[in-house]
Length: 199
Image (cartoon, rainbow, N blue to C red; front, top):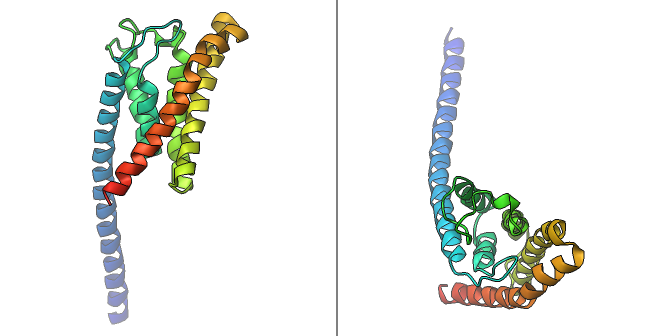
């Protein structure tokens, strides 16, 4: 009997330890969810603000959206980056004026739809890649270039449906290539400088 009682006590202690660990994990998960939620809200606000700074060229206007997308890919977790852009697009689908165009409820039918989908894929893959590589200058710059290749790949690919290959490249890629390279280089340089100054 004493031995049986000892076994029950050990089982009880083991169950209690498991319960404590589960409670701790649940608390950590809730805290993480709150942080992710704040990041998503900030991401949506940044994307919306960047959408309102527009150079109205056709068929796709120039905005600061891609800079924010690169920032999300460089600093957010893959989950937060994905949910930020997905939430932003969902708000646009619901009719809220969060995109560059004032009437963008059916944004997936617009000439810029490919770029918007590219934003979602780009930021998520950049965040995943950042977790697997070092944060050196050239690695970060390469990550930004990869993100832009994804954006332009989706954007130009969708434009080809509208206007054919030659015009899609001429109007959907060429005006953005040099500014995109400059933005990526400046963005990485500024981020690295800020990182060094805050150490």
